[in-house]
Length: 86
Image (cartoon, rainbow, N blue to C red; front, top):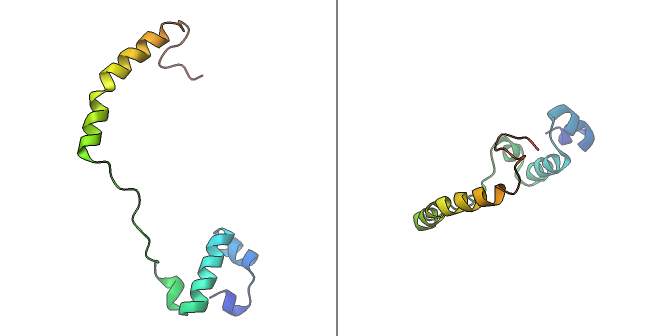
């Protein structure tokens, strides 16, 4: 709607605190759908699908073995502690 008032993309970015791609999307939606376009959320495809229960069980079942392997590897680094930050 700011574009309809002749305000440029950079000024829109400053006023709204949004990125240039977001301003461009709003401008495109306004151009194709009118005022109603930018006023509502655009539908998006769903995100990443959750892992199957079988996959979660398989990974969790391997955690004790991984923990043991890590403990064996860390014995070569006596200065390392789980709480060290570097």
